[in-house]
Image 1 (cartoon, helix red, strand yellow):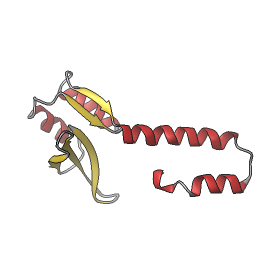
Image 2 (spheres, rainbow, N blue to C red):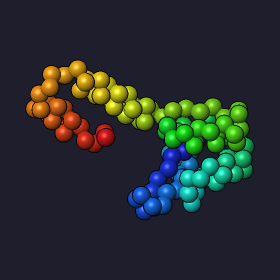
Image 3 (cartoon, helix red, strand yellow):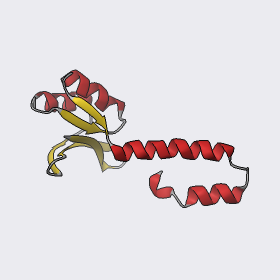
Image 4 (cartoon, rainbow, N blue to C red):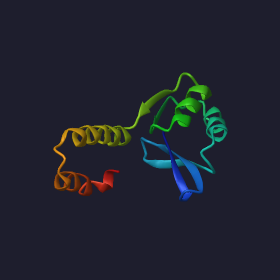
Length: 113
């Protein structure tokens, strides 16, 4: 299963989507991303063995609390995005302090921020 939060109304109302990663189909849309909502859903679906998730700390804790036997996988898209941010931050800290270099490097990559 894959689990992630999404927005109904940006900055105001969030939900949780649960997808079957084999079929790539949504399995559930939860009305919020509250730990108790996600925990209850997971407890009602004890067959789940693996959950792919992002770095949202609440999901990590809730999955562990719902079942210690669920293997948690940090999904590759979020992993690569976070690794890229860390690398960019490091590179920008060691690049010569030329506005052109910084502007070109960061402006061309806004889709990953």
